[in-house]
Image (cartoon, rainbow, N blue to C red; front, side, top):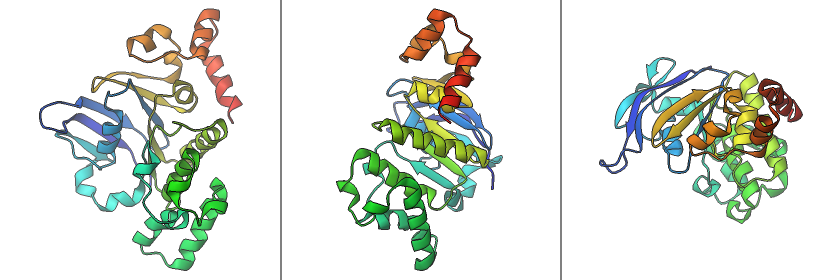
Length: 263
C-alpha cells in the first residue's frame, strides 16, 4: 500500500511550557524522499516521532492518505519502519538473529518463515557472520545495519530515518543511499532527518529546513547550492557548494553528476 503523509500546524512541547515545534506543516507523497534539515536542537527528531505516531502533537494533526493518524493507530504501525539516530536506542534483544526476528514474531509468522526472512535480509546487509552475536558488542556501523535489518525484514511502506549516515563509513553510507533509492523506486514514502548536506543533496526530492521549531523554507535540492542561504539557516556549507558558487557552475548539471556518480 502506498501512503501520502501530511502535517498541519503541528505544535509540540515535552514539558507543557517550552515549544519544541511551532506550527509545522509539510507534505510527503508516495515515492518521494523528503529530508528535514536544520541546526542541532531545531526539533528534527521530534518531528519524525510525531509523523510516525510515536508522539502525539500538543496541537495540530498528522494525516496518512488524508485520514487522521490517530484514528489509524495501532494498526498503521505495521506499515511504518523507524530508524533511530543511535542504534543503541533501538536494539534490545540477546542476539542479532533475535533482533531481526522480533518484529516478525510480533506479526505472528511461523519460525520457518521467520528464519527464511532473517537469513535473506542478513545476506543483503552483510550480517550473516554476526547473527549469533550480541548486538551491543558490534561496531556502530554494524549496529546501524542490524537496526535497519530489523525494519526492512517486514517490508514497511513508510520509512523514517533519523540521521541514517551519522558515524558511518563511506561504504555503509553508499549502501544506505542505495536502499533509499530502491525504496523510492517501489513507491515507498521516505522521510529523513539529516545534518549531512552532501547526502541530502544526492538523495532528496524535497528539503524542508527547520529552524527553532518552525519550517523556515522548502527547497528543491538544487536551490541549496547557496552558501548564503545555508549560513542563514545555521547550516555549514560543504566544499561542493563552495566550489559550485566560486566557479559559477551550472547547479543542475553538478547535482545530476554527483547523483549519477553514486549509482
